[in-house]
Length: 148
Image (cartoon, rainbow, N blue to C red; front, side):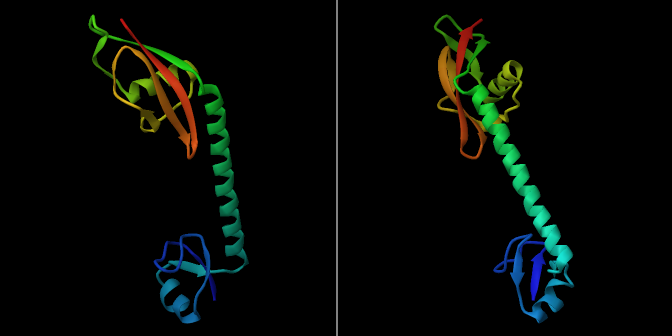
């Protein structure tokens, strides 16, 4: 019997997959616990629509990430911070501050956890920063820190 899984089942499949199981397993275990439903025309149509929806969302996210990458790639963000006479900052520049600066200058909302710093920014100067926009889509930007 073919069934569509409504939940992940160990050693059987993931949610939304179409699998073949024995009639007894389906009627006595999967159906009573609402783990699966019979693969009739309506269920197959819902499965197909869900897959198309997921693909559309993924394609849209990739397109947005590529657009943001083209805007960000090679950009230079100038940030001012309090520093001593030797150029050492009082504190440091964090990913959260860089994210806020990107949002302010370019209007692109980037999560602070997606910003990769090669080292802590504790002195004035120019730093290379990677911004992960989507899986395998990374924009490289520069952050210049100037003393106030």
